[in-house]
Length: 180
Image (cartoon, rainbow, N blue to C red; front, side, top):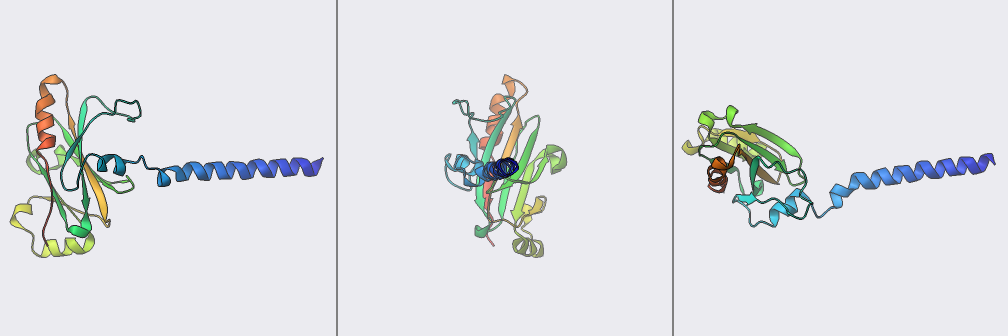
């Protein structure tokens, strides 16, 4: 009887470990991640205004924010992200291909409330700092050791009167590879 209880207990513990491991590996093997959703909107190096999914699987969408995303690959060179316009609040986040948030800031920490950001890997950043282009003199420089990634800009829409202004801010944003 004791050996039966011991075998059942060992089986339950083993099954628990397997189930926990499977749950932790689901995001790694999932095709429905942020990268694939953003890829479905179109090519790299241009912002795509993200629409709310209407099938109920869209996650936690905040109706007071509009979002745009741009995919990039630092193997092509540093990326410069710019946007200007009259919006009540914006924030920007940099993610790696796995969807891990690497860096974020908002309009309160930028120069004149304008979005001007350069993302580069460590070697590119050394070259950039040696000979910083005049256009990027006021840019926020972010060094990240990644290959592919994406940038998400979120604009606050407090009421309907701001809808078009925030939409224009997001759709007019630039995401360009800087030549090295």
